[in-house]
Every structure is written in structure tokens, then in C-alpha cells.
Amino acid sequence: MLHGRETWPVKKDDEFTYQRAESEMRMIRRMCGVKVTDRFTCSELRERLGIDDIITVIQRHRLRWYGHVLRKDENDWVQRCADYEVEGVRPRGRPKKTWSEVTEK
Image 1 (cartoon, rainbow, N blue to C red):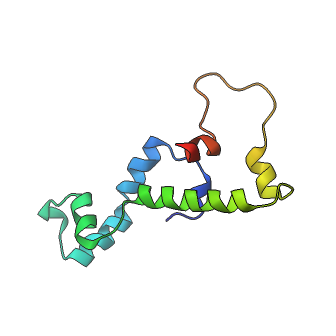
Image 2: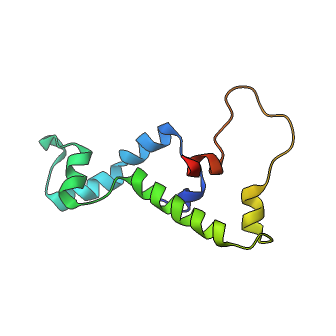
Image 3: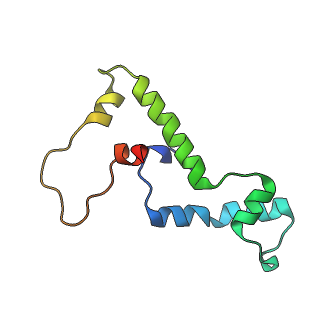
């Protein structure tokens, strides 16, 4: 489900979508032996199985990737991409979060 998602900033809408992913919840319900009509919340079922929330997993993966980037040489392309500043005019409105802003948070 993640597929390299640790390198992208996650929007609030994406977080909600990931937490309610139907295929994952279907698997969790089957493991617990619970039907949809039994009315258990997603967090209750994850807690019952000892599974972390998907947002927590993404944050953990992001910090692990950040550690890899910090240990790279300064001349490495990954390090240069992390430090790269894009030139030009920004579009109107609130700017999108950068990867470094998300990892600092």
C-alpha cells in the first residue's frame, strides 16, 4: 500500500483515505472474524490485532528514509535533490509542503 510513499508529503485527505482503505479493512475484519454489520471502528479492530495505524507507519518509514538521506555523501544525487531549491514563480495560494517541512514536523 505504501509503494515509496515515505518520500511524498501526505495531505490530510490522503491520510483519511489511507486510514479507511477498504481492502485493508476487509482483511482486518476477516482476521478478527467480524462482519461489517457488527459496527466496530477501524481503530478498535487494529488495536485488537496490535496493528499500527497506517499514518504512523508512513511517518516511521519517512524518518527511516530521512536517516538514509542524511548519511549520504554531499555529492550524492539523493542528497543534492533533497537540498535543491526550485527557481521560478510560485503559483497563487498556499504553497505545498516540502519534504523537509514534513520531516521536521
